[in-house]
Amino acid sequence: MTNQPSRKIFSSPQRAFQTFAFGEALTWSLLLGALAFRALVGLPQALFTVIGGLHGAMFLGYGVMAALVGVNQRWSFGRIVLGTALAIVPFATLPFEKNLSKNGLLLGRWRLESSGDPSDQHWFDRLFRWFLNRPLLFAAALIVVVIAIFTTLLSLGSPTEWGN
Image (cartoon, rainbow, N blue to C red; front, side, top):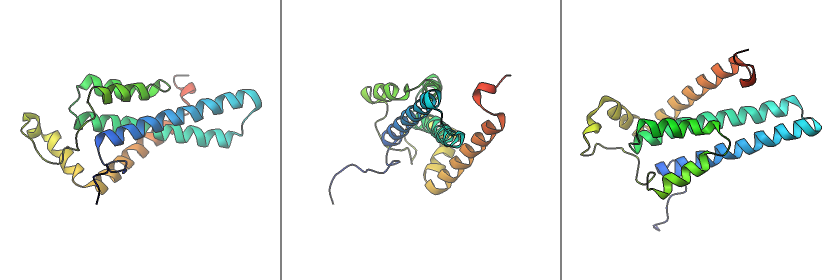
């Protein structure tokens, strides 16, 4: 067995965050490309709907991952909100991830056990560790949350129609 780092997406907070930051930027590229292609030569609505849905799912997945990694890494509330909100700006997740990596804010493992930090005794931190130690249940719960948000947003219609 070698000391190679794991290639699993969720093997560390850094790997998970980098994967979702890249995926969110990639789906922005697909969406913006589809918008440009639709404006120039047309695009079947079904294809545009699929690309938009893919981006929407990745957008929400990135938001959830930014919040989870932020809690795990003990970022300030403001940094968690900023990291989540940056998904709105095309490609902003990539420089944010680079800045976090450069400053060591993604280093370390998932907090599966209590440490000497006083906040580990808070109910939310205990619940967070409980879920981290049950990854399949945690993944299922997060998928349900993302689907619920996605369904709610779909029922509201296109973002360009909100408020009209």
